[in-house]
Length: 224
Image (cartoon, rainbow, N blue to C red; front, side):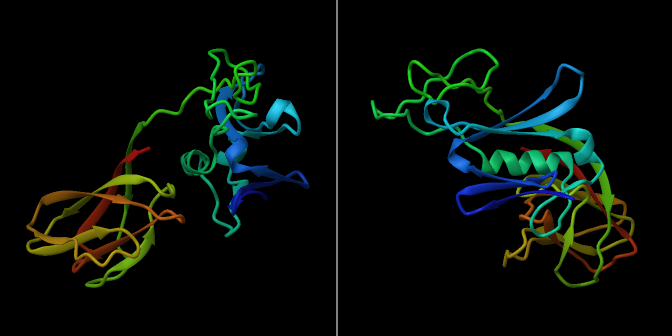
């Protein structure tokens, strides 16, 4: 099993018997189709004047196959791995020798340079995105807040959860792990409501329902 996780200021990758220690502030990632048409994720650490550059290529097929996990043995999905990389990689914050701390970004598709005027970075920014979902799941405990892992385990992401009941006067709620808010309401038979909630580092949220058998939950979107 290959691993990727963060340890303080380092992004740790263990793959094929090799361990890579990448400094977070000097590491970027990109997802693209390579020359053979493979869907791959490139994780690249640059360094001032191109000294000490490191690169790891992850085949998306291997992620889909459940071959990548974090240091807690939680298996990544493609959305959860990309969410982790968005939170734990960054552009080099300053140029190599002062000069006001500006980072120069090129417009081509290579990953060369240290961000100084003569050696620009070339990184395509990751824009906020929306992914439509329809993943059903159920509560596990009646009449008590409890923690569950949502389908496909997106970590540290804002998701939308729809709650539906087929009976009258059901109390339901959705909240973040660790929240003390009583985010629950009563809905009637054949009705539904929705909550926006952020998952934690393990892809977990908390649920409440006083009627397990007649309450259904659905993840309907991820907001990256």
